[in-house]
Length: 134
Image (cartoon, helix red, strand yellow):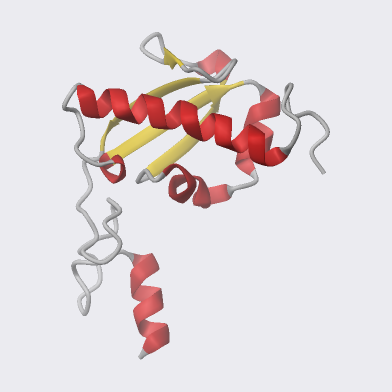
């Protein structure tokens, strides 16, 4: 399925090593008092095409995998000067504290919170679950 895992034996090892790199970056944000929890963070990942292709398959679920409120992908040649090189080879990361409100149900920070009149304190993803359960 994945022909080039850049030196890793299998997909799980590849993903766990990237997750470790992101967790280290998030911990540095905590240490610097930028965030309290990982869900307060929004991250941008910069890497080569091989890594981007694999992570792109996760779609929006990347943010759940990394336990952040946003996890966007970018080609390494677009990385800004402030991007920090991670412990994963060829991966640079930037991050900031989310400016969006926190969902009262899942605790993710999302721009759509407050837009639903019936459930103004929760995100669309949680609203879908609640409507399904009603």
